[in-house]
Amino acid sequence: MLVGDEAKLRPLLKHHGLVGKLAERVEIIHAASVVTMEDKPTSVLKDKKDSSIRVATQLVREGRADGVVSMGNTGAAMVASVMVIGTLDGVDRPCLANAMPNMKGRPTVLLDVGANVDSKPENVAQFALMGAVYAKEVLGVAHPRIGLLSVGEEDTKGNETTRAAAQILRGVDINFAGNAEGRDIWNGHFDVVACDGFVGNVVLKSSESLAEGIMRGLRDSLKQSLWSKVGGLLAKGAMKSFIKRLDYAEYGGAPLLGVKGVSVIGHGRSDGRAVASAIRAALRACEHRVNENIQTSLQRMLPTVSSGEGR
Amino acid sequence: MLVGDEAKLRPLLKHHGLVGKLAERVEIIHAASVVTMEDKPTSVLKDKKDSSIRVATQLVREGRADGVVSMGNTGAAMVASVMVIGTLDGVDRPCLANAMPNMKGRPTVLLDVGANVDSKPENVAQFALMGAVYAKEVLGVAHPRIGLLSVGEEDTKGNETTRAAAQILRGVDINFAGNAEGRDIWNGHFDVVACDGFVGNVVLKSSESLAEGIMRGLRDSLKQSLWSKVGGLLAKGAMKSFIKRLDYAEYGGAPLLGVKGVSVIGHGRSDGRAVASAIRAALRACEHRVNENIQTSLQRMLPTVSSGEGR
Image 1 (cartoon, rainbow over the protein chains, first blue to last red):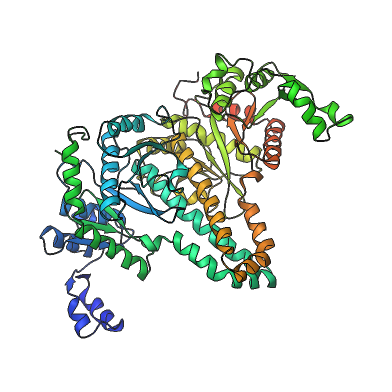
Image 2 (cartoon, each protein chain N blue to C red; image 1 turned 30 degrees about the horizontal axis):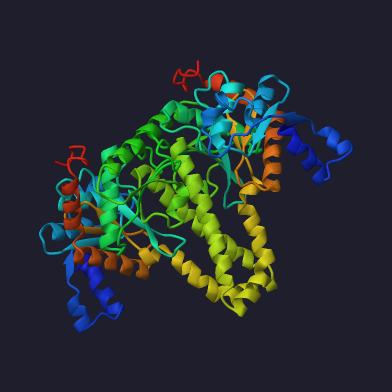
């Protein structure tokens, strides 16, 4: 189902060759407005009730859709998902998970990357559990190794929140491997790295920018002389395979874990490939019943991992 | 002055060609022990009073040295600097500043990168002020543009600490440009980016690891075929000039701002060039009277920017 302005979407389908049988597979659901990047996230609850994201989440609420995928305003997509679709029993705060491509060519799930700031220890512990379910069910990691993002490996290192969260996680039946440091997001030592959404968001945006800057800087440096241009051309294919491994579009889309239906939120700058990845991630989350698994897993561990908010 | 085991240092001087007049310029100050990377930072106050870092900071305290440079245990160097050299009047908590090479080929000062976790808003505001003095006096930035690391540009975005810190900074006579996002550490839009030490440490370690991983991955990918090898060789020179810009060794050494003498702490893996950069940074901090400037700047802004701890 494609949700948006029907008058705009209909011709686009044709334009992209979706005609005949193919077009029949796409159902257009009309939505009169869109939440822009400048709109406040809460606009979906007030003056933009007819926006595409609000209408799309409504489809999930009503059971007409299993999940929703959006590349629009992240805040609005989160608010609509949480308020319209609703939160799973036992989940205090849904969180945004992001699969980062690590140096072993596998994904490391970093979460929360921006749904919550000022998280309590119980929230961060829940993020870790939800990340473990996601890594196992959607990314196919058999026994996900879970880390808590901190400033040193030792148990004593960290801030008040992480030290208390570690205490909770040590009492729970998961593969908790202790503190992870900044470098552990990339070296593949952990499959899941949990943190407060403030920290995760800063690390995510900083990393995207740094990686893009390095690639752009190298490309520019190759234009300096004829020799370096020729060298760049000869090396292009080999470098491309590596760059592809780093490419966020390969993992496109951050699932909002902890809501009652599947919700995947993509980057505003997503290209077709990234959108396809996001849809694939949503599909896999539906097929593997990520939410039921999260709920079972959390209920098994309650009351250890609850701040009481979600009950 | 070179502080350490005289029996080990003396032959090393000769080994590295420091003989005659050159050797006379180096005074060896004997220290019987060293703080290892495994030792607790507080060991400098108890069983390792004869360690090189403790002896070196003692020299600063006694006025025999203007500053200290260490590539050893970061925690121990911080504890020794704060406890032995002491904190400047008005400074609640000294902080570790790190000059990150940004995409405009200039440094962005990120601070605190690990001296303090669970910082109060007043602490973060002080970090911003100290960073501004450092950027101006040591890095030569005329009117440093100061940002507060957060999760969005808008004033409303952030956590409790950053929102309160922003409030303080808006009331102070500096070039405060509002919130910076993760990407702003790299794009050169800010000269100084202030944050809590937990966040700064995670971003620093994550960035070092990501940049190294990308460079290593690209190097490895160039070994794939004869053509890519040849290409890599042809492009080497051009790429080197870019990599040099990114190199932490060029900016080697993080100054601990807010102590009564200059203290620069370097990376444990520093090579000769990084050590030289760290010594150069310490020298410049002494020459430009960074501490006096920090003290004047803070006193001018008190009581706005004090939690009361430091008085």
